[in-house]
Amino acid sequence: MRSPALVARPEVSFEVMDRVLSALGWFLQSESQTPPLIPGEPESAVYVKRGTDSEIHYTFNPVLRLRVLDFSGPDAVGEWMAVRKAVPVMEAPALAALLASSETREVLLGLLATEALRERSSMERVAALRFHPEFSVSRTAERVLASLVPDGTEEAFARLKAEKEAHPDRSVLFAHLPGEEQRRQVLRWLIHDQTASNPDVDAVLRSALVDADAEVRVTAVMAAARLQAREVLPALREARMPMSTREGADPRDRQFYSNLRDLVAHVLAGRPLPPEGSPKRERMAPLLRALSGPADVRDDPTLLLHALTTPVDPGPRPVGLPEAVVEREGTYRLHRSGLEARWVPPVEHWLGTGPTLRRMTSPGFFVARVPVSRAAAAWAMAASQGPVGTAGPDAEEPLPCTLVEAEELCSALSRIEGVELRLPSGEEWEMAARGPDGRLFPWGNSMRDDGATRASPWGVEKLVASLPQWARAGLLCGGREQPLCASHREVPTGVGALRWVLAS
Image (cartoon, rainbow, N blue to C red; front, side):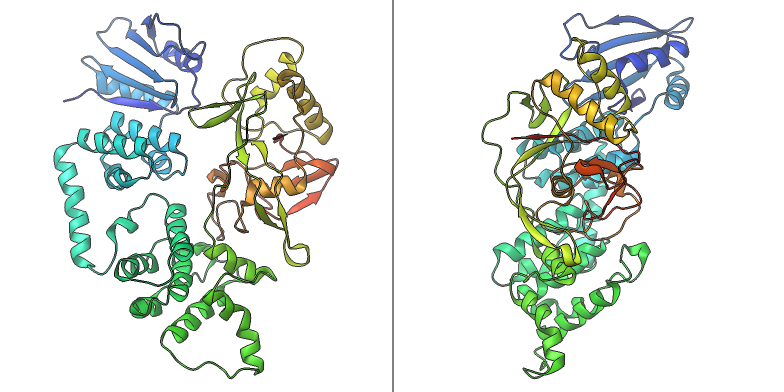
């Protein structure tokens, strides 16, 4: 029997773990003598339990922040259980989230953590990742899948085979693509790239029409209309449209979704439409145009149709990097503090809602991946007076601050980095949150309870966490109470979090 293992959460530093283990009676016997890539973070260490033969072998992958603890000794399981209660660790739900991420580094972390924990519940997701477009991911998924329990692998493939036999007209591969956002984007690229359906596309659409994600189902209805997929008409008529808040449907959109499905079925079946020039035909005109080609955005309903049919184009990479920004493993960071940034490319964005709806091109800028944490803020105020290392992990809870304090903190970070870091404008904040497709929320067009854990199309995170976030002119954007990307309020004396931007 292999020894039990734990994978600590990435934000748990070695210093914190050492302190917790020491409190549980573990003694640091040795650590790697090679200078660590990250100061204070040895890449291997051995702990022993006083008075026992128990050991913990700790390894750290500094690129992915993978922290693995392997236990050995006569009471390895008991020691494993005690440490598991004291150290924040990764379990199956966290692994599933990583494996479904759109970020390559997070997917690789999820794969290696799955391998370390031998988490068989993740095997189907790992199997699907063998077809990931990133070679590093597909190659790692192949190896991890092979390392898992052999009979578990056979069981996973047997389930996939049984699923295909039960529904030969569906695409098993599409159904097991990791993450609903990836499945949505596959459908939208089909709309963008294909001029008509074919048997393979029909199989994808049939799978999408019964998908667990409501937005995938609605997007599949639009795809069936655009590609004239008449062969999927029976499945389309049976497709369940979101009709409740639990399914993520805003009350204003529920009847719209149902009417959309019925109209698409009507059109694909070749049934006659109301006569040209009639009031009913005039009311249907915007929707009919959206079913035959790119949506003509005029108002909120037509913007929703646009968002449901427009794939997210990553846009151009930055032309050269500002002196204060470095790129490592595909991730942008501020040079001195190490705080992580995301790139918002110079592409058109839909902003606003209702009477404020408009289109604006981003100038191209870097934005903080997450709001500045308490620890990073304390470091910045000290480091702006002199060098004190790097800011360290930036994934902690954000610092609550006033508008004046947020501007002072931006000034402190600017002195450290030697460039102007400032609060975003309201438009910049919305671009970072909304992406180029005009979606309602950072994660898509449906309400969801876990929005605080979801990233925007540009990879910006914690946009709807507990605190709203400051923008220039005293605007508070985002937060749990106003998750719509276009929502903001002017509260110059309030409290919010800080998210900086850096012009390209």
